[in-house]
Length: 103
Image (cartoon, rainbow, N blue to C red; front, side):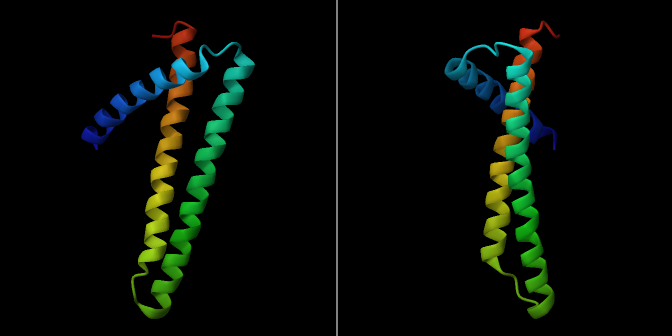
């Protein structure tokens, strides 16, 4: 897990750079709260969808005892998209923290 967290920290720094170059500074607390809320909501959508496809997978498995790879593909893809959204959540939070002089 620590290796993944180290890699995610590098990805986070890249996302902070990309977002800052694309959007500039967060101009107000309200803008930052809105950006943070939007990213959290987008991550939540992906997590909800992932759980839904897991439910489809589990129900199909219980009925016929066969692994449905289509459902697993959806679970995987939603998990990856959720991870990307969560990196963006962390990036917005860190950008604001740095702007406000947080250590």
